[in-house]
Length: 539
Image (cartoon, rainbow, N blue to C red; front, side):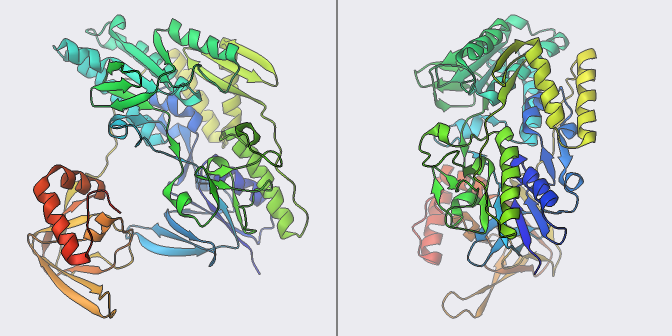
């Protein structure tokens, strides 16, 4: 019987696990990878994308190009059923639920960003996790420079020219270094902005910069950043944020309109909901990378808690969530799965870090490799050489090298490009007979009929018999989505030419929370219709 290997996630862990498995398993073993995007993003290059040193498309590679002999499916993962050995996904334009079976499952979904513990931070901070995050940060910085160049209000100019980065780990230091270089090289195009008016700040809760490196290299990194005019505030956390202020834990208020958060890693909802054992939000695995209590479910990368020795208890006893370790975990997982399928003994995961590198911008870096410590220009060159070698795909390597060459001999571009995102509140038109949505598809919004009429068909909660309801102008449907329901329970067709207003869930909740009349109406409606004492945000 043909074995089916299903991999969830297309980051470092998922990509390299797929490639290593394909090398080691027979061709009749079917390997499939599911990812929300159809490309692999090389995350260490995101700060350079944000700074305009690398074109966004050159920091990513199509997964199908990298994964020969592996099926790639672009879809959103809904849930995992380890008893039935199926993963439910939403795919395609209609967001139809599809079940994908497996014999062995590899979970490599990484982590997401959660800034909810600090009031206002999730609403006002930019993040640096995805390609779109990097593109958005670049457009945002250019917008602040454009604004500062024309405003006549001193306080507005001060806020526009103050840039704050939260976190002084690798991501934070590389982001602030590249952002400062972009600003410095762009100022010649903005005659009303003087270098001394620009303020760049790094906020770090710990007492040192780049805590993953030695204290000496951390001090060097801090000194280099400060030499370039970057303020470093250590031993301070974030209390809250507004559209024009960052408030720190010691009460310090920084007037700013730019906050970049490189903190707040958290497990995704899908990982949290999996029927697997978790520790601090990460999947608990054994040393052979199988999930605790499951012989057919494996996990690696940032979402997995991987012990490096028997009886691991301390933080240093577990594999750190880095790309270097993810690649080695992928190789170990592939070897162990091949051994398991062949009935051979498996080996515990062992790996010692070869070192760490960080770019500080302005052709400076820090590195600790095989026990040797480097700083300055040599470390920066080593950083670039290492990541070029690490990049998957020959074309991507060439593209990045060409970008670096052009960046070295030409000025930074201040062209401001914005990608289109569908509005959270939008009108949608339907012809008579059109299907608006059908039962079982992914819920995508709350609908209010503006003109025309639709017919809603859903099963009675007691008898299961179909119930039909006509919804006309001024009435609404799809409110179960507001309660957190992921799938539609009914089917809706347009009875005549119809115009509806669609609100995304988060926007609906914000409006309901802000307007007492609307909140009161829906609290009464939810109580009468579903016998639920509802408040905005309740799932």
